[in-house]
Length: 250
Ligand code: SF4
Ligand code: FES
Image (cartoon, rainbow, N blue to C red; front, side, top):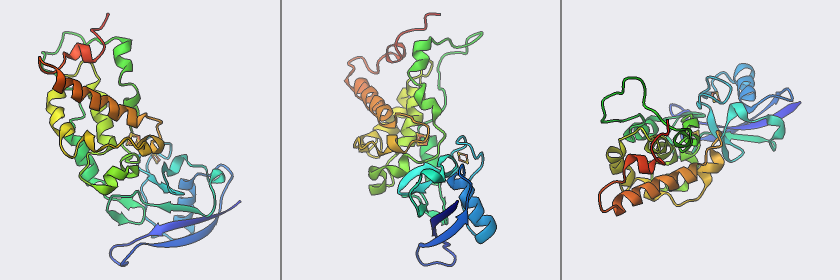
């Protein structure tokens, strides 16, 4: 089959502004947008720049705007897309070249929420126990591959690049909802900040964009509720076990 694909090109060393180039390439019925991008690079234009690594929806490196929606190029079958297929870099990040964007600020925000287990207790002899119900509370947000599709689909982020963004909040959720974690106090500052969760306007673009099917907007809502509960508690932050659904039964 023949595929028509329009790719947004921009080389900051040569171009004053981004522009579109259209290519017509041969493709197999089960080819994905990533395969077509490879064909363009290998057969038509060796200068085309884009990121990819695993090729199977795991590494998150090839998120881009495909026919106007943020998607992973390695997961989009070309036969199911309207032609010409349009491919552009994710919005809101500086373009390094063509489809490659600068994700430095994105990963700074990721680090700001401290995306790791924080505990005050001495390590137990064997392991920190957790019930299946407690594990279930953050199961959805463990699936995040940090592709950036949610954050760059968010109008609140487009309006204010300082906004923490859905991806960082998803990462905070993963640890805030973990019954073993004790880092809520340290994370509350950045989450409650003027650029934190309250900039979310519940638009749901993030949920639509997530290639892992994570309920991103719900996760942000959970974090908002947790912050409200912390500020409303007369005795200070609610106990860790209460937040996480009770102590482990094991
Ligand atoms: Fe990507 Fe989904 Fe994680 Fe956002 S929540 S960074 S869209 S995997
Ligand atoms: Fe790894 Fe697409 S190349 S997610």
